Image (cartoon, rainbow over all chains, first blue to last red; front, side, top):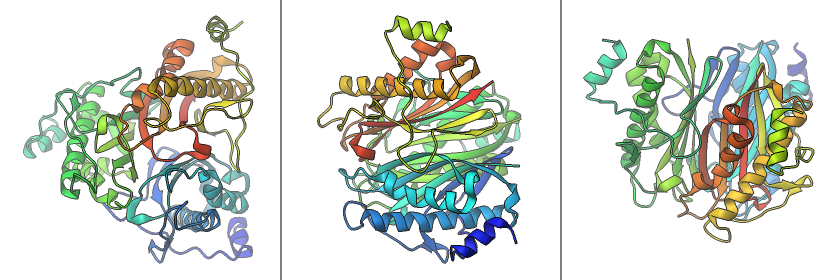
Length: 154
Length: 154
Length: 154
């Protein structure tokens, strides 16, 4: 059993099969050994499961939990694209987290930590990334966040 | 005549000379064989031609049409940067579409399909990309969308 | 003394030690010779120093000045990551500038020119980048802009 799968088990995280794109695009496209992933969100059973707006009907703690669920989806998508072989991952390079929020909400970093903390917990140093966390007034299907990412593979 | 130019002709699409940047930056910058393109929009004759906000004064259908016009500009810019040689394109890797919209608008993917559908129609599998579609409250010159993209060349 | 440090001196720009990330992520992550930097802003002494919203309590000129300060931070971060050796920089490839603004503000390019002009002034052709400038309703700690960037190193 791979060390990463062990850590997932210890954390009680079960990866679903990663959700598929909802329009005319693909989950990941490759530029050599740099892979660019499509924006993802807090999906369960292949569809958005959490809705809301930070600063309005969601607390930072609820946002963090939704971001953690988003991160679990991102791990599921990566594992699927690796055909189950975590050794393909060299480094998570970049994470961009867009948080649906009110105009005066400024704690996007605390929300997107839900992804960043999970990646470091599960993937160790390979999960340590550069990051942009920012706000937006609107996201697909009223999801509270959308997160896209870039990795380097071996 | 290149297969891609044939498909453009069949679709009745005439590429203008791609619009030039409107400030102190360039249309494309290269990191080896990965090319990063500046944000573009629904330009005609080198300037923004469609204005509006989804969920307010534009329907999803009008947004899709504006995104398709944006995609035509993106093709024109690529053809110019290839010096007309479509064979340089290995793969469209990533498309990020930012849609100017009201706070409760959630159909950004249906709007940005205007770019994605066009790319697959014209470029085939080379046009199939990873994607992020999201909302924003404001864009340069009140354009309804701004789209940036990354490609791999041969 | 390196040519770039000379230009900084001529312009009267003193680089602080670049500010460190404010959450569980890193300033830069490397995908081979392509480096992805985390979103930065108008920091002084390691923390946000300018706050506001374009179209509301900040003019375009004030926004430009804040973007220039952001650019100075970006230079400081790069110099730190190069261990002081500017020769590592081959090219600034991409700059994405997100401007906190009202819904009807459309001059994001004029604001983000504060970064672009500085980069070309200080770095010459190596500072000439592809760019996306766009609006957003909300940013971390109510900063007026957040800017992320990608470079190629030697």
